[in-house]
Length: 146
Image (cartoon, rainbow, N blue to C red):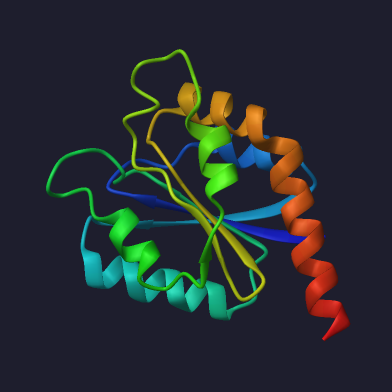
């Protein structure tokens, strides 16, 4: 079973999100952090090194000075997946396109930053589900062929 981790940053845990990802066939665990760049960067790096398949952050991707999650995740990312970012952000809800959501990989881990609103998260993930699952499959196959 694929392992996913949700890191809630500066926001409360969302039990519904964890159940939602379990419905995708993902074994999900969660952590909480405060909005601190160095702490976020270190924890995300630690989680990727623990061989997680999907790492999702929730919160900290807005327009304020305190929203440092995109910068933290970019600092440890190997490659960005701009197509997946585009799929996540294309929406008629005017709040979604101004989010600074980032999608990319480090080694074999797919990393996605999401807002702290469950309804927006579900809309975004529903739209990108097939692509996310395909990316996870490709990353697993790549790792196995090495």
